Length: 350
Image (cartoon, rainbow, N blue to C red; front, side):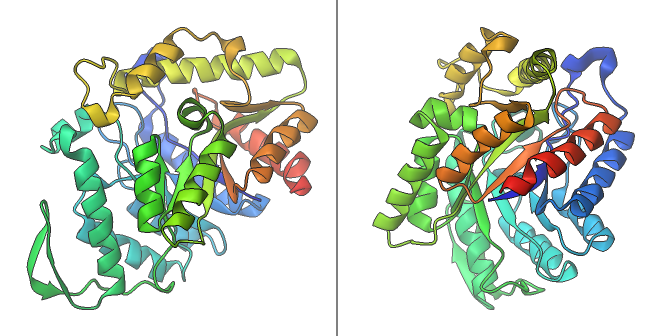
C-alpha cells in the first residue's frame, strides 16, 4: 500500500482571525508537495475550491503543472476536479498537457462537489450535478481515446469533429478516479469502469466501513466486467506521543469539520434528492465531540496505533491512502515535522 500527500487548503471564514494569508499558504503547500517527494510519498493531491468559501486553491491543473517542473518522481493528482462546473473538453486538454509535461505522472480524479455556492457563482444548476458529472466523465474519456469525435449529449454538444491535443502520454489515458460519497456514485463508477476514492467517515456512514465500501465497489465492478477496480482513501493523520497529543489532533479535526459545515447541504427538505444524505452527515458532525472521533475519521496516536489502523486499510484492498496533514490550521513547520515522522516511523511497515 502506498501513501500520498493530500490537502484541501482549508482556510474558511469560520477560522476567523486565524485564517492564513492564502498566497503564502499556497506557497507553503507547494513546498510541502516537494518535500513529500523527498520523503518518499507516492503522490501529491491538491483541490479545486473557489472564492475562499473553504479552500483557496482554484486550479489544480495549473498548480500541478508548476509542481511537475519542480519534481521528478511524485505522481500529480487533483482532489478533486469539480467537473460539473468545468467544461470536460477543456479539462481533458489540461490534464493531457499535465501528463505530457510530467512525463506520464498525472492521475485524474473528479467529483460532483457539495457546495451549492460554487455552482451558483458559475451559473450551473446544483440540482443537475449528478447528470452533468456522468456526462462530463463520458466526454472526457472519449476525448482521451478518440482522435476525432463528435458528441451529442444533454449538456455538451460537439457537432463537428474535434481532437484533444496534446494526447496523453499514459495509454490509453491517465488513471481516472471518482470521489464517492454515496452509493449511486459508487454504482456509476463501477458500471463505467472508473476507479474510486473514499473518505472513511462517509464510507462508514454509507456502507458501515471502508472495507465494506471497497468490497461493494469491486463486486459491482466485476458484475459489469471490470476486473481492474482500484480504490484509494483519504485520511486525516498525525503521529503523536501521548493521549494529550491525540486529543489535540482530534480537537483540530473537530474545528475543521465544523468550519466546513456551511458548505454542506444541511436541510433534507431543501437539498436536491441526490445529495440530501449530506444532511445526515451534518447532523452527526454537529453533535460530535473531539473524543468521539475514532479510526473511521482520523489516524492518530503512537506509531504502533497508526500502523494498526492503516493495516486495516491494506487488508481491505486499499491501494493507496492519501494523508491530510495540515488540516485545521496546522502550521507549515508542524506539517513538515508530521510528514517526516510518518515517513520515518510508519511508512516502512507497508
